[in-house]
Amino acid sequence: MKFFEHIAKKIFRENGIETFEGHVAYSPEQAVEIATNMGCAVALKSQVLVGGRGKAGGIKFADQPGEVYALSEELLNSKIKGESVKHILVEEKANILQEYYISVATDRTSKKTVVMASAEGGVEIENLAKTNPEKIIKYYINPLDEFLPHEAREIACKMGIESELISKMGGVIYKLVNIYKKYDCDIVEINPLVLTPGGIFAADAKLIVEDDASFRHKDLIELSGTKPKDFGFVKLDGDIAVLGNGAGLTLTGMDMINLYGGKPATFLDIGGGSSEETIKKALNLVLNYPPVKVVFLNVLGGITRADDVARGVVDAMESANREIPIVIRLTGTNEEEGQKILEEAGIPFEVSMEKAAQKAVEICNSLK
Image (cartoon, rainbow, N blue to C red; front, top):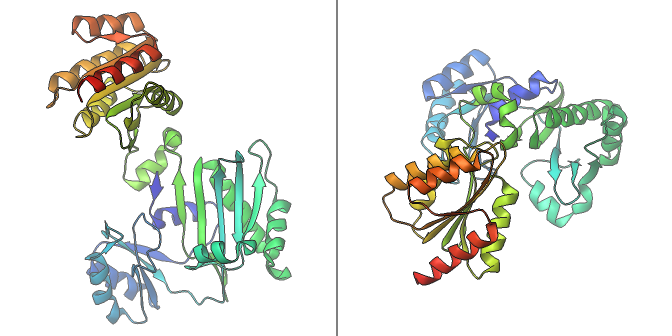
């Protein structure tokens, strides 16, 4: 779950990281009013959920309120990397003395949290990672260990920060790690973190929360005005749609399809506690995906109930615009009720994942 810069900065401020004064505008008139009330030079920043907006022309600067209308109108009628700009952040223009880079992310290879930091931040950070990777400090944190303030100061020292700024830089790093943990993030990032005559500020903010943890952060969902995805959906280059309740089970189903000579057309994780409505939405999605010739639904009921799955399947198949064969492996919680619902609807099922996957491939091959 991604958040716009202005929302991420609100979270940062609430957790002790300083940002510049800024307000959101949805029209050129609002932007002019905000800039006039602020009474200073401003940055007009497109609020989009893609990176590289600065290079793409998504940030403009206005020294006078009279310049704001035309620039904000230009931004609000633009697209940044295909994403329409619907609102902008009107923010105090910074007097930057130095730019830094800090991020906290999940490193899935090491199964640890990694803090990445550099004394060189800004739009060229990606080039720096390629040309001078030694300038980006990496500090790994065991997720079972407490991250302490002295470790944050150690990272600041390794960055080569001036001695008088080490405590302040360490404070920002420490707070960013705490935000990462508090909100179950995939990544939190400040690029650039800037030094100004008034102190150290987050000039930009990136916040991505793990979708599966969104139920713990309803305040963030309300703040963003969005709702979390019902499921994870990835298009692949095969012709057998693979769905499962859980990423691991879905991947295992894909492996089974590959084992028996088939090719998955989708990866679709309906989640560990899917409702009847979620099942129906997921099936409607793959049934209307043109490359799909057969659907393989792989469900091992735990929190997900087999009878809910069965009712969702029946509803989806009855309302489908295309007649696509479906092979279901259904077992687990309330499996007898679920299997009875499928039997009464004339929809076959298996309790063995291997048999179901093999049958899905055989049906697909017969249609070629």
